[in-house]
Length: 125
Image (cartoon, rainbow, N blue to C red; front, side, top):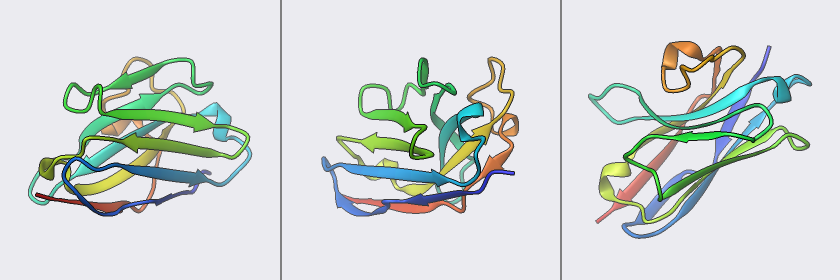
């Protein structure tokens, strides 16, 4: 069992930055690949980024590539999402998720076993 708690969301102006954190409970955090998703009102949950269990590989959606960076610290049981050059269309609830056996399906929400409760990010124009 893994429990995930996101933090770091808030209101930011366009062009600004935020860093989201996702703290995980349990001693098996390093066994999981981790991903970040977001969901805006009326839209489907969207994959943003994922990182393998040891941080060796990262994956990004085209919509955030070059602006967002995912990283993890297994010693702190935490995964991060650094978001730069934010745009109003980045406004959404942001979720972290843990995946025990993703295979090559890091971008698929159904691949993930555990989800956080989400944190709101609002980007004003």
